[in-house]
Image 1 (cartoon, helix red, strand yellow):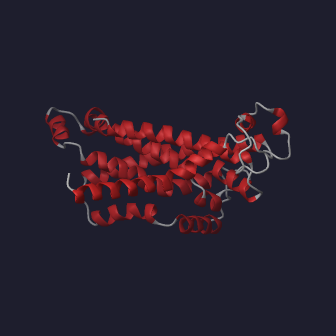
Image 2: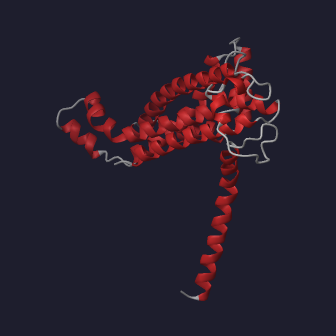
Image 3: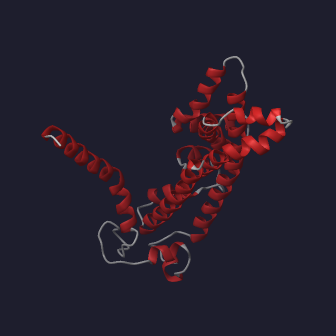
Length: 275
């Protein structure tokens, strides 16, 4: 290896190290300090403890009742239940509509097809705060009370696009002659779909559904604008905790969310990559 090639390799290696360190170092610090025993200043290490995790899961009554810690574990559990309900409902709706639109765009010819495809990208590239404000104005004008229902509608407006993109990529890799062969053998449209098309694109559908679930669980900006009094989600609950002061449980909650998101994302990527 020449001197110039070694120099380029070393520069790129150093750049890559600092690039990943810049991205993942803050996340690593959150996980580390989620075990910090200091109840007042979570950035000053004062020993190792599992107290914050035990508090979150309700295993330490003494800590839960302390004014220094979680205001109410019941509120936390309600926020988690709302997030799971919203994410599950939104995922089912977005997966059905996103998959149907992807199939329609890929298999049918119609006017302004390119424009329609580009229109599906718009909710993804639109700033969240703009979409949140627009949805809030819409719900207020049509007299719809802010609740879990409005959050589901709001999440569907942009999560359908994510499912559409993932499933479209899977359809693009599919051999159309398989469907033609199914038709030549006497299968009708529905039989070809269930026995040929569906098994081929199923990894893309599952991957898109898992991606939609993660994004719905983690969304804050749009949810903050269109959530009602009794429809607080987990990200909004954490944001409310931060506004009242940084508490040690926040790191533990963030670490749990991070671990859950990584597991779901890894599962989605694995399923999507299967042939």
